Length: 191
Image (cartoon, rainbow, N blue to C red; front, side):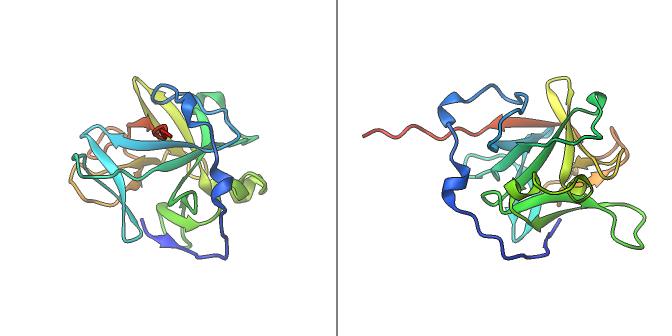
């Protein structure tokens, strides 16, 4: 997955203020108006990292800093309860949003990062939002992420380390499609 389509969007650090003292348990339901911060882990204990504009899954080690995902609940009118909670996901302080759509002439969709301000997505029309929306559905103690624009296509990681994060329509085969969302809490500062 590569970072594509740069735009002239700048973010103020004040836009991302949130009360980190109220960290909830891992994978809690998202109903906040502000993005919540998570790291994402797959079934092989790999974490998502950003490597030169590409989102990859690598084994978690003490010296590895997982990518922080800014997760924002979406209001998708066409959403169905059975699919899960519609959400937006962004990395790089909310400046690059996960995007899943088919390019012209392609048979299957691809997962990309697009330079787009996370909070600006909420004000767009549903058709423009849809490639940025993923259904977060509970799967035991983990979650799947299904593309709203491409039903049946799920975010996945390879069983091999260091591979780019992608999408698959073959759930339960070679790729991991179930993930643990770990809440990222800002440590309290002492004066």
